[in-house]
Amino acid sequence: MKPPFVITVDGPAASGKGTIASRLAADHGVQMLDSGLLYRAVGGLLAAGGKDLDDVEAATAVAEALTVEQLSDPAFRTRAAGELASRVAVHVPVRNALFRLQKAFCLRPEGAVLDGRDMGTVICPEAPAKLFVTARPEVRAERRWKQLTGQGEPVTLEDILEDIRKRDERDGGRAASPMRQADDAVLLDTSEMTIDHAADAARRIVEAARARWERS
Ligand code: DC
Image (tube, rainbow, N blue to C red):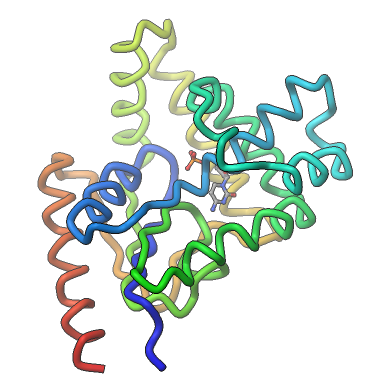
């Protein structure tokens, strides 16, 4: 039996993957899972409880108890929460605890869009449409800096670039499910693209995958 039409969108921070994923979900009339938010929530709740980010047992307990309702807290969307997320995401038991929720999403019969680092490689390797969205670190840093200063957060471009490089290294260099382009994912480098241009390019890639999936 053919798998549901699931789209995975992986890539580093500030590559444009979140916007692309939500536009694809709207196009296809399906739900989107922002898996980064799960790790952000685990990191945020752990830190709020005064626990060490390397306390694997405590982090795993938070991940096991996590509910979808807890994800709406805007505190999980800050720059600091991204760093906490990347720190707890290195722990295998934390990743295992979050696996089932993510896998259930990828098995939805109506299809879905999943956004993250290991959606196409680990969570949903059978997905018929896979994208790996990236951009040069300097370009990503500038985008993130504009967004944060626009929201009134006083940060320098250098600090953001440093954050991004550190996060790329940790997310791509960890032993457990490192960020990696799946062999059958299409690479979309958005360095020289506006977000509308990037979303259009993504739409075309997914339409081609959809046509193949329909014929299969
Ligand atoms: O996509 P994001 O910036 O919200 O992700 C925050 C961090 O969570 C990211 O730096 C690494 C981790 N993460 C992960 O390890 N696996 C995922 N599927 C998604 C995010």
